[in-house]
Amino acid sequence: MGSVGAKEVPVLLTPDGRRIDGRRLDELRALEIRAGPLKQADGSAFVEWGANKVMAAVYGPREVHPRHLQQNDRAVIQCKYNMAAFSVDERKRPGLDRRSQEISKVIGEALQSVVFTEEFPRTSIDVYIEVLQANAGTRCAGLVAASVALADAGIPMVDLLPAVAVGKVAGAIALDLKKEEDNFGEADLPMALVPQSGRLVLLQMEGHMTEEELGTALDLGVGGCRAIYEKMKAALRDRYSVAPIEEAAR
Amino acid sequence: MSDEVTADIQTTHILDLAASGKRVDGRGIDEYRPIAIDVGFVSTADGSALAHVGDTAVLCGIKLEPGKPFPDTPNAGVLTTNAELIPLSSPTFEPGPPQPGAIEVSRVVDRAIRAAETIDLTKLCVTPGEKTWVCYVDMHVLGHAGNLIDTALLAAVSALTHATVPAKRFAIADADYALDVQHLPIECTFVRLGDQIVVDPTFDEEQAAQGRLTVATDETGRVVAMQKGLVGAFSPEDVKATVRRAFVHGDRLRGFVRGGGP
Picture 1 (cartoon, each protein chain N blue to C red):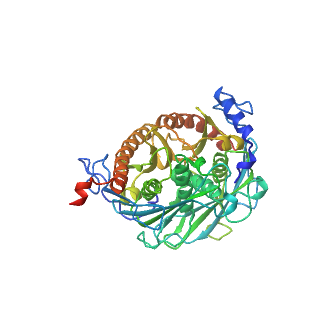
Picture 2 (picture 1 turned 60 degrees about the vertical axis):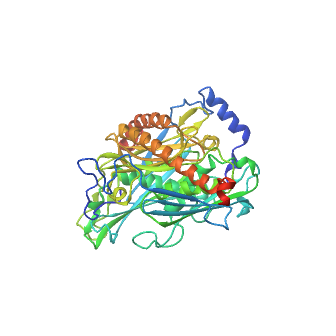
Picture 3 (picture 1 turned 120 degrees about the vertical axis):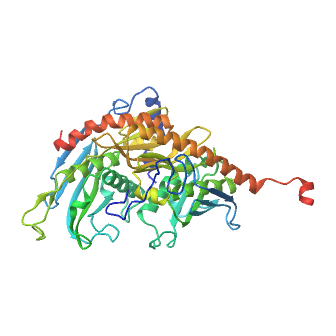
């Protein structure tokens, strides 16, 4: 996992099962989701997840640019995942690299799996994801933000899309890797769940795992996604619930 | 983009057939198209292989050149993977900078090669921090009849397996020597057609697919990479069953790489 010839490996797992930041193997990092922070966008969300800070904005359904991507029977979802130059330790050269283009593709396809695109033929739903501060798991944080932003924009969907990365750290399967675990771990497996159907619409993996470990990882990830799902719904309720009149008057 | 190429009527036909366990080309749900690998197709490359899976053809050429290691990995060689979906191979490919589809192919192939530690990058190092071999894995798609990922990795791993390090040409050693390959990753791609999950999709099956899943395994029993693509979804049980099938196919396909041909 990009650790060839790299610096000294930190202690990733203590004998009593604590991780580098004190978490248990099945514990998520702190996650805060805010729906609708951007007033200019049709929908938006800000996600702070561990040391990740990710903003997503949704525009549309609107005219398709470039025009030739237009579909006569449905909306297209154009997703752009981008990392700010200052979001990582060593400055990242701005602009689209191959990694961000691949991530944009898989996130876009995941979103397209749940949005009722046939409701808006000949339009584009544009999803912009900006990683402002990165600490592993940015594609999952980006997808969570994008999904809440789509809901904030009022786009009809089958369901929200919670996402999380599971990995293998010092031989153990662990939920929601942070940077050191991602860099020095043995495997990384990001996934996104449609909670209503129990199916996965984003799934990638890199590293090594046995067949059995992979099964454990999938189950752990699905559990993690269900917990994240509750926070996503809570964020939308926070934004849109109306206080009772006597409460508001006081 | 390429949606116009497969007619709706064909998509419906594919899905109807799949529902009864059949495929347009008469194959079974869990059957690959014929595979052939032609090693050493290009003599100007340091290693090359032309892989065919049915009518899909990918030519991979390896070039090794001395270069500088990355500052964060001073003791390791550099591996660069690139896939070109050149316009000659399909009416849907256009000239110009690589599109997301081509980037996905090269990144998924790259991930399998890297994660399986196909080549020991530390052995490519000549002088730590200063000089190392840079291994370029360039893949040209010559025919796109579906399942580019599996075909591209077959070509890449076959080419690497039979590659030579041109040490004499670059005056780094007295003689050229064979590139040391430690593991043989194989990628198996499946698509969902209704309730069926079929292996080795054709171009039309990919257009009709409701989700695609690629699983890379190696000969030691490890899963080394996965990629879900296209619009659609898989249950965790689907994924586990697919991984099992990928191990079985992987063992068979690895025979073609080892043998360099059928």
